[in-house]
Length: 159
Image 1 (cartoon, rainbow, N blue to C red):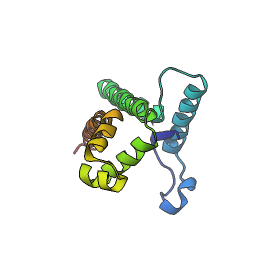
Image 2 (cartoon, rainbow, N blue to C red):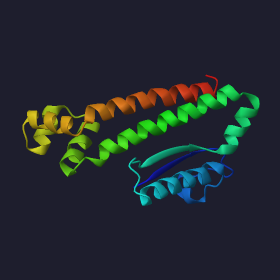
Image 3 (cartoon, rainbow, N blue to C red):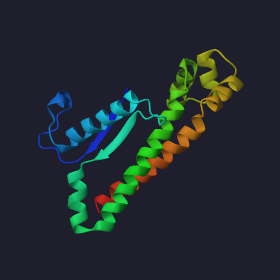
């Protein structure tokens, strides 16, 4: 599975029921991100990525015309976000079905004891599974990513 996130203008009304009819630069930029990921996969690059955020180049040009430093800062945010997503992809790549089942329960806010009961194992086994899956590192990356995206969103919207 590859995910492309495009940031740019949308020229049509957004409808949850008809997502395939959404058009605009954000949509085509997301497609460019997916194409980039497909090209990387097909070339057997050593960097493993499943998700890529891409900002429409026209948006960068528009920002740079007003403030070059701000455009550079936003480009740095984009690189940081993609580097973090790449690190998360590398961790996910190592997960097997046992890791996935355990992490799914963890993400559902179960305690380790509850997870152990549902999985039919000891609590210590749940802890070992989370550690072997690098779950805590993964969780840290996503929490840091959430903070950075929130800060960026506030800055872009002048909050």
